[in-house]
Structure formats: C-alpha cells, structure tokens
Length: 421
Image 1 (cartoon, rainbow, N blue to C red):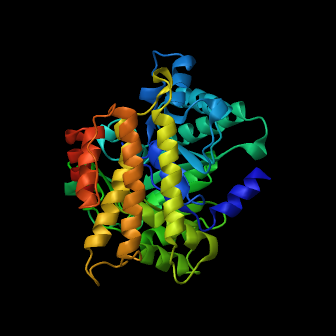
Image 2: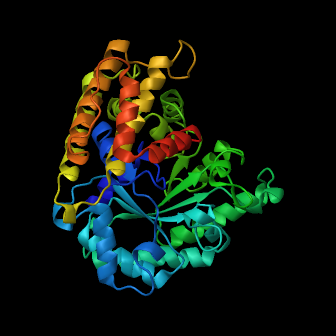
C-alpha cells in the first residue's frame, strides 16, 4: 500500500532541491508550511561527516538527531534523505539505522554534484557517473539497508539517484551531447535501475568535474530539456524521471506541467525556492487543483509565516543542552522571505516573468508579521539589547535586526550568496 501511494504521489510532484548550507530543518519547515504537498530534501549528508570509518553507530545516531531531531518527536513529512558516499558497506549500515529511527519518502544517492568542496568530483558525486558498477553497488547497498531496517517491503522508502545528463573532466572537453552520450546515460540508468533505483532526478546539464566553480556548473553547461525527455520516454513505466535545472518561475513550471505528452514525472527547483520561497504557496495551489489563475490569498502565506515563527521560537527557547540550531539558522528562512517581499515591493510592472501578485498593503502586512517574529526572537537571544523597530522603512529595520541576531558578516554573506543564485 505504501509503495502504491508513493507511485501515485510521484506523478506531478514538485521537489525543493537539496542545497548545501540551506535546506536544513528550519528552511524545510518554512517550505513545509508553505507547500505541504512538495517534496523536501535534506542537504547532501556526506557519509564521511555523519558516519566516518573511525566512528561507531552511536556517532551516526547523534549526527542524525542533530539534523533531524530526536526520533520520538520527529514529524517531518515528504522528506528525501540525500546521501553522498562511495563506500557500499558503510552506506548500507547508515541507511539501515536511519530508517529504523526516522521516516523518509525516499533515500537518494548523490551522483550529480561536481564540486569538490561539496563532496563530489574526486571521490563521489558526479564522478560516480564514470563508475556505473560502483554506483550499482551503492544502490544495492541502499536496498539492503532498507531491507534490514524496515521489515515490511511495502513500507520501505523509494530509492533514487540524482545525477547529470553527462559528465566531462574539464571545461575544455565540454561539447554538445551526442548519440554516444545518450547511450552512456541510458546504460547508466539501466544499471542503477537493475540494482533497485526506481526514480532518477536528472539535472539537465552535463557536469564539469574540474575547472568550474559550483555556481558556474549551474550556469555554463547548456540546458538540454529534450535530452531529458528522450531518456524519460526510454524508461517510461520503468523509472520515474524528474527534470531538474533552470526552472525559475511559476509560469515556467506551469508550462512544463501543462505538456501532457511529456514522459517526465515531476520537476525540481532549488535556486528559485531560495530567491522566492513564498512562491511555494502558489506552487501548492498548482499541485492541489491545477488552478489556471495561480492566485493565492495572503492568509495562506501569513499562516505559514506565523507557523514558522512559532517553530523558531520553540527551537530558540529549548534548554541549552537541547538546542540544535543557531539564531542564524532560525533567521535565514525569514531573511529569504523578507528579500522576496522587498523585490516585489520594488518591482516595476512588466519587469519579471511572474509579476508580483501581492498588493503593497499585503506586502506591508507580511512585513509586519515577520517584524513581530524577529522582535520575539530578539527577546530570546539578545537579552533586551534589541533595536526597536518602527513603521518607517520596515525593510531597513528588519535588515538591522537580522544583523543583531545573526551577525553582520553572516547577513552580508547571505546577501552575497543570494545575489549569486
């Protein structure tokens, strides 16, 4: 029954992509409040970090609890656990213990990250695409870990692989993909499917293993949606294919979903969700009823923000020995929401593909909600040494408050990183 639910739910899904230093539990909570139907992904958890060779299973459990919370109070839904590894034995043990303590919709193996500092290139990530037999062993390890950790086959999470449509050693080798590249990817997907993976997330760009930064790896290699569609048609009814890469607006997502002849099962976006997290409320309407207007009442966003603020305050007021997140961790989701609201406030008509749907009064109302939440968080963290916010230039006041909570250097880094998305 659980597998049937998973198969039905896979049709038309939207995935909030895994993003290092972003998709920790606080941001996933805001995403969940805005769009309960969307699939949320953890950051890529490198096995060398959460289960090093020198550490015991107790160390693994401690790392999982730090990221996901105590198993007895775990309540996340529609969550995909993404793992990065090239060690089948430890991967099997990790999966086994993770699913014994927590419920996931899917266990994903990262075979698409090209950045060394993010855990790829030299050891795993996108370099695994050049080693299909090792990837087969890793997928099989996940399958064996699920079997050992969950007795009922129908209750086991799906197994998926996230990869690119091709892989080149360096930018000098980059070229348009040809028939041999299609055959290579077809063989790779066949290999991992035979090992037990029933879902593949395809970033519609090739990976460049060296010579390009993570940011440039998301920009310079050319998007090729047709390549993904051809592969999806090849594996239709066998493997669910999710299209990832280059989806930056609701209009674009709606257009992709409207193609009923497309063999693609679902779609994923990452940078869009960071730049405009509140758009997830409109994504939720699209997922629920395929609304043609895609309008959303301010109440839905207000409720999501209020629920997130309640969560953040709960986390901030835990006893010190139980706290898992810094003030910066809890503030970042609100910062991203504020930046979107400021963009919409400043947006000129016709400037964007998706013009703002919120009025100035509605934006001001949402600013007020966030302002109230930040004031309460300041009470938790600054022991009364807070700056009083007034109604004049609320955005400037909020920016100052974020700096008092997270630190000027951290907030400036947030601003730089958002500009690079």
